Image 1 (tube, rainbow, N blue to C red):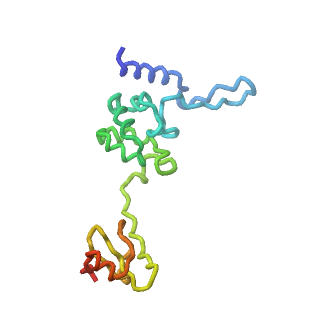
Image 2: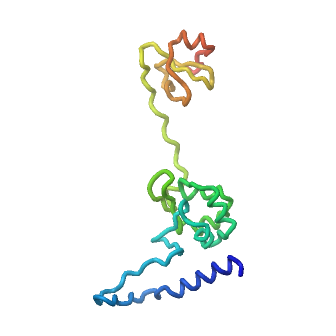
Length: 181
């Protein structure tokens, strides 16, 4: 029996065990109060989305449109920081839209992030404010562009690999003054 048929049979069996919509849950055998209904294992819902960073390959394969190949690609591409990053696995846009409400991401950069506004591309964060040099008269040397900037330049202190140095050190190291001042 193929894996897809087994998955379909498991889903049909689990769906048959679910209570009908609108019907009250059966009374608890102990106190006569309604029993709490738990989510059947392996069937994600909007209320209980599946975590793509921790779900098994079989659980991911049970998502609509994912299949065993898609599940393997998801597992291989872990970890994800957001549900939108699932697009790097090669799943179609339609499949991503279908499974979006059924999945979430945790453990890779923060709290649970179900599909939604948090997965829309954000505007980049504004650059950090200029850093104050440790000593007066220092310049910011950027080894990537081989330029230096005066501490009064708003871009000073913003490059990833730069460092503070004296102007004479910058010139001696072969840096040229930035032309944007």
